[in-house]
Length: 308
Image (cartoon, rainbow, N blue to C red):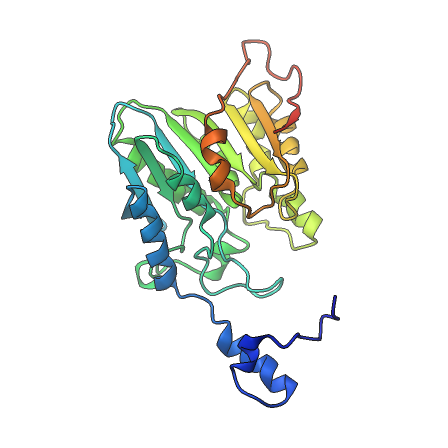
């Protein structure tokens, strides 16, 4: 591997013009690798959603205007809610992005792979939404405050607004990456959640930050702190064996913290954090969520990880 200060001359760099290496590098970094705009990412998301029969809608909450994609064709059936990950929160390790809209909307990809009649996808605050519609949006809400109380409250309000379209039916929560934390924090606030699943879920924010040696997030809620409240909720947490962003032991830490028999952990061999989870999702989603909890059984027998 070349030293980090040496850039190989890629054809895309040469297309930027000739000259000194420094000029080539500057041109490559600033001109030939422009990030896609919010509009371009939104169009791609629209295309993905449309192919799966999902339609876009904006959800007004007390704190934010959230972007959603949904399909509700059977009001007498459960509603499965998919929550997006943190998105493009950081340009570099120390430089936040100016727009957290995900470059790969893996939460949306999971939703489009679900053939159930009632599917809802919720983007996180400030993702896929014009800044003019979200005056409260600030960098803090996709960095240090991405799991803040007002964020979780807004996401929960959005779930409630859609829950009224399936009156009396249970809610099923799925969260990708940081969306797994949001799903857990929402589940702890509701009494209509039938089960929860996370995919590469950041279920212990403090431990993940410690592993990556990044700053603590005192303005955010940590999902593992409310894990005992979910002891009797059926749940499966899927983790990739090759995930270097949220390592598989994070899911096991959360499962142990629930202290009950309703939590399962599935380790998916060869899968990375941003791998092709959507390809596997129909099969994973078909797995039943088991819960053997009964009065007096809470805390007996910690859940064990299973390799898929």
